[in-house]
Length: 196
Length: 196
Image 1 (cartoon, rainbow over the protein chains, first blue to last red):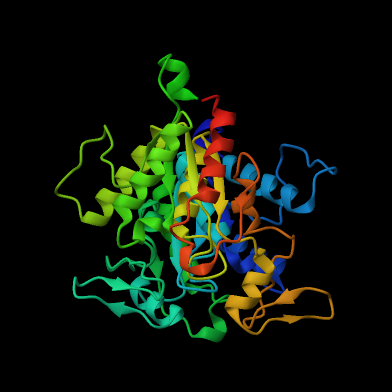
Image 2 (cartoon, rainbow over the protein chains, first blue to last red; image 1 turned 45 degrees about the horizontal axis):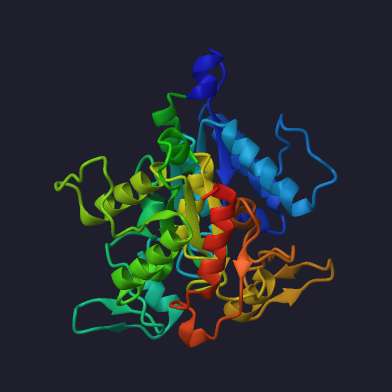
């Protein structure tokens, strides 16, 4: 609780990571999530907010400005709340996974949620097509590379980076990117840990 | 060059991250890569090595021991050399992406290579099936989520985390996980930056 402790009455600050930034109404969706955080005693920032520092450098390409802003947000937050719902494959969005790793390296809390409960091994099979279980008992994909089989929800590095267990629920596909129920349960867990 | 500077004559230490740990002969493949690093003046550790500390806790589940060992390796290294070849989808392996983010959060150097040169936008289209370009000029996937279109090789967070530009080459599919040419070019670039 860097900010909260240093500045007394300030609410813990959480950064909202996730591929929901790719939704057509992403800014409005982020505002809905921020409102939930406030109800739970947390301040929230999204990738659409402008970080206090460093000042944006207009000479840089757009992608680099976004990258630097997101990193700055995480450095200035107490925790990341990450949408780890599988994204275009068996795993979470790689941008979000990067941010989970970054937060862990910076010593920040990381909380994760997913709108599906299907495990990583099953998702790898479902999404990646023909896999086989060899005589040695190991699942292998069509390139012959083994599939992790630890009964986890994603690659073990992603799972290990979380400060508390994933909050997951099975949300029907049409609502998977906009449902806020599982998100709010994750926020409530984060608020308890952060002492909000 | 944490270790190198602190300990005088010690070679810079690099951690070899990548989904090649899932190859059937992964330990032998890692040894081939380590030998290349030594030729370029670098020491290398792989996820199959046992870190000096912390001692493994046999009471923990296997996946957690692997997670802690990999994190310990990165904390004790000067840099990560990451195999960012697309893995089971348009993006790099999520475990590797986590490690790139972690290294960046810890202030380590990160070097990346890929055995394909196809960009992220094209790969998203190729792997993820029907996408459409809407009237606003934005590519969207079948869930309606936009596809990044910055002419980069992966999600912009992954690209931004690299200390120098990605080293990439188009390696034919059968050799994509075992070819060492693009890896060696990346090691040479890392050795220059690390002053090996």
